[in-house]
Image 1: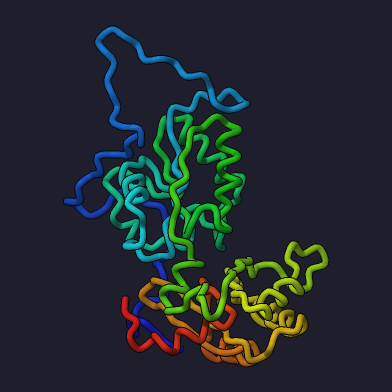
Image 2: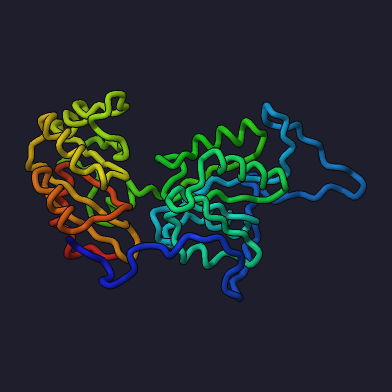
Length: 310
């Protein structure tokens, strides 16, 4: 198991809600409309009144940004994401948001933990309600999500709810852990000599689930045909989907990598094969969040690892 920055903490600090940050950080000039600057109306002339956008007739005066926070390292935030965060009245963040990012919020910004992890998980319906309530109150709200909002991030559900309530919103893309983990580990997801396709699935679902939305026989066939398979959120189910792929006919010698905490100080990469991965992960005590990459492209890491830096 390769490890970056030995002895560093294994993840963000305790989840909490707070206000303020270190003094001296300048406040962003704000999120500007992409069509250009705001032009003031002449004295005595009222701006046009917009009709409510949603079916419910909401008159929300605020705005919501569904922002991808990237894989963890604040340096991997997009410029648009950073601008939205610095201009927000409130930031509703997930469990995996890095504490270093939260510590840089401007004074007066309210940071609210809406993570779904115990002991105080927040339901998705409650998150929906909070977003709408704050926007109705005139706030600029950032819903900060790990990775990209629309890659297993429920960004689509939140966008649908905001639209139904007439709340204006913007989706700000983020660097998905799909891309961050592979790049951090030096593993290309596609390669002219190895793979011309990549498939991304969730590892939360049990492979033997009767009504599973995933066809593991087809995924096995894709691997055998030379594709790359990426499994997100699959640490606990690693033995299950490895066994299912083996049953589907995937060669037990197929290379596999597990990238733990990609871009965090405690990032680690475990390389193995389909045959040895379960025992290797158990011995290394791999913990979430981790991304599993399966396919011949994993072999590239061995060729580039010594020269790889970040």
